[in-house]
Amino acid sequence: MEISTNSQPQDDFVFGEAFETLYGGKAGGGKSVAIVMAALLGAVEGDYSAVLFRKNYPQLTGKGGLIEVSREFYHELGGEYRETDHVWNFTSGAQIRFSHLATKNSHYDHMGKEYHFVGFDEVAHFDEDQYRYLFSRIRRKASSKVTTRMACTSNPGAKWVYQRWAPWLDTNHPNPAKANELRWFKLDGDNEIECKQGDKNAWSRTFIPSSYVDNPALDTVEYERTLDMLPYIERQRLKYGDWKIEPGRGLVLNREWFNIVDTIPKYHQAFRFWDFAATAKKAASDDPDYTATCYLGVIDGQFYIHCTRKRVTWDTVKKWVGATLQAEDWAIHGGEEEGGASGKVLASELSKVAIQHGRGWHSIRPSGDKVARAMHWSTHAENGIVNIVRGGEDVDSVLSELHAFPESSHDDMVDAISGAFNLWENSQVGQAVGSY
Image 1: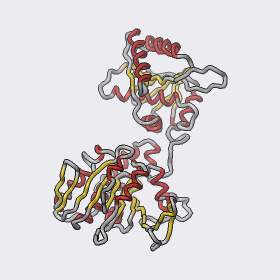
Image 2 (image 1 turned 90 degrees about the horizontal axis):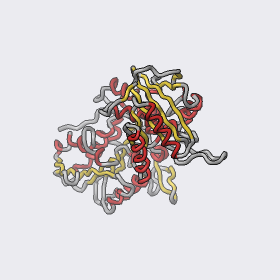
Image 3 (image 1 turned 180 degrees about the vertical axis):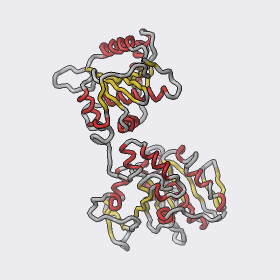
Image 4 (image 1 turned 60 degrees about the horizontal axis):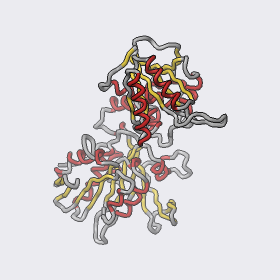
């Protein structure tokens, strides 16, 4: 069986000369296939040993996972896969292993191991310490003919990856490097410095850009459409390869994306989410978080949000929740359940309040950080289908907080809106839906 690459960037990566290579920069460039193929080059040598990493085990398996990709051609080249330890053994005696580094110190599981090839698929998902430690596992015998190599793929992400390949990725770098250009580096004490080829202990590094337009196996028209559906920040990273963009004012949520309306049309699906503050305001100089609540109405492909927030005691909050439950018996109500015993106690108290008013209560444990939760619905806002309803919190205050997120001093309303969208999304997969 003949194995061949399907693009010039993929070919440059698989057969590259650099000791340390980063491949990717945008989505859809065939990164997983490329790194699986690159690991295979030394398998004709009997002493060859390689390891390929993903952050966690589920990312190794399933459609598109490294193990499944390897099954497409490793067996045809004389490999036998051993399920018990995720190792391919070849007739030459070579081994290619699949592993993961899910926990902070799991890289120490490879202490004492020897590899000629170390590969990180989506290296931005790993900690820098994990990546750098694996350099110590790359070695070969003096008599070995096998080339040693550190190869990795990535979409834009971790700052340490951006800084490590800054000459190629930073357009303002004082000494920029061209794509596929080899640069040489060495350690000066604890610091890494650029040096000349041939300097003692120097190693070569390069970056090979790729994207979905380079991948002939991909339906690029359909894939581009799916990239365009991503939230703004993720779209800039994955479609355009923007390594610099970070969540900031107007990027996660922009005040220009929202419409302002007076009322919500009747007969809409209705959801209300509560984001509870830890403390009430006690002194004039205090600036604690608010207890904020968002009413979300959904009808005809449009979303209507109505926000309210107060700084009040817990007893007052419970009365506020109870009165709202009674007044809005058509809506689905819920709130965030924080981790730990205190979060369970709070959820239990609110469930009792709901029962007293003959209603249900949905406690939701947050998934991901605040930015990730906001980005989950920000595309709807960017598409112009999120409307802010007058009559609650001052509209300008709502817009100011949304636009400044995540740099604003308060994010209570953002969290409440994210939670309301979470309630709506849960309703789409079988939860009972209230309507008005």
